[in-house]
Length: 209
Image (cartoon, rainbow, N blue to C red; front, side, top):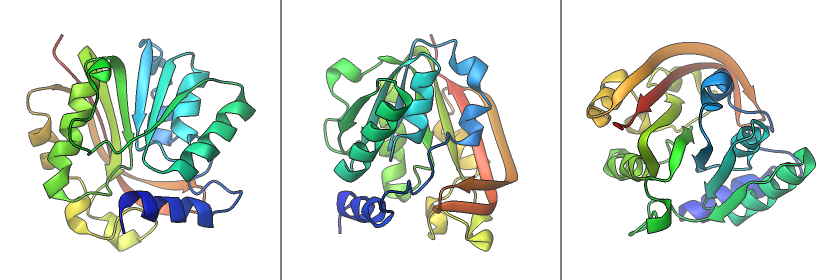
């Protein structure tokens, strides 16, 4: 089953509810002031829009990339309810030749929240796409789970190789300025999908100007 089918089923099964809630991810939301320094942002694997819609509420021009049409439909409803505009695009970020030329080096902020649905063999490609989207001097903001999350089982992938460590991220962004890299635990409540004590990692990295 491909990622589109997997995620569309999960989002459909949630019914009228939002699988991961409608509030922004906490790591993202706590960087509100820094995010407002930018003009635009793109949220990849955006799901049902909770993060892209919140970014639009900050006054940024926002694009949301998501593979599931079901998720995008729910995201559009959320944006309409919050009275903001988001450019939602249905796309597979791992597809050959993506991102298109007009999206390369185009964004002040590239946001990836819990995008650990791929293993190491695809992670390099995933990060490369994020780097391509970032303009010179722009930033990537990433939130993920660490291997300790497998003990909590409160969300995220069940495969340890999909999870991040500080070493993985430092190596992947060795040619970037890592402004922030924190490994921590927190109790989160993001819909029914992420609930309870969680082992988290967050990063903000800046591309050379």
